[in-house]
Structure formats: structure tokens, C-alpha cells
Length: 100
Image (cartoon, rainbow, N blue to C red; front, side, top):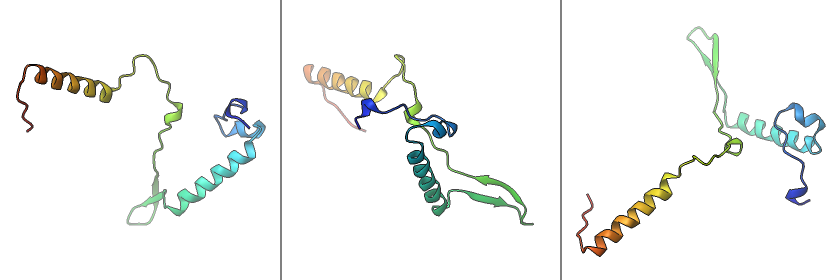
């Protein structure tokens, strides 16, 4: 099946119930959960009297949900252009460049 023919991804767990590929997504999520358990992702926090106080878990950032805008700035590209400009100016005026 081509990507353009795929239905939209489910955005919530409830969406899996009526999604065409809900079973596949659910199996993938279960595998991911088991993998995180094996890697000890969740660590119970206890005090000296062994009472459970809370849990620690990893934070996952979903870059695929980020909505880009026209105001987004990509500094690495700008820095490279500025660097090239400065090198060109130094070459044009025969200036010496020192790296510290």
C-alpha cells in the first residue's frame, strides 16, 4: 500500500478501536512497552521505610507532532552563511585570520 493511500495515523489510544490498522498499532505499542520495562525505564522511588513515594520515567518528545511555522529559525544555516561571508571578506581584503 502506498503512503498516499494510508489512512491518517491514530492520535489517541481510543482512535485505535476504529482504525483500519488498529491491531498493528496496538501490537507495536505493546512491544515498545515491554522493551521499556526490560530497560528499567520506570524506577520506583522509596524512602528508608520502604514506602512508595513516586515514580521516575523517561520523557519522550514527539517531533512528528511539531507544527512548523514561517517564523522558525535555523541558526546552523545562518551561521554557515555568515562564516562564509566573513571568510570571503577576509580573502578579498587579504586579511589574516587567527583562531583562538
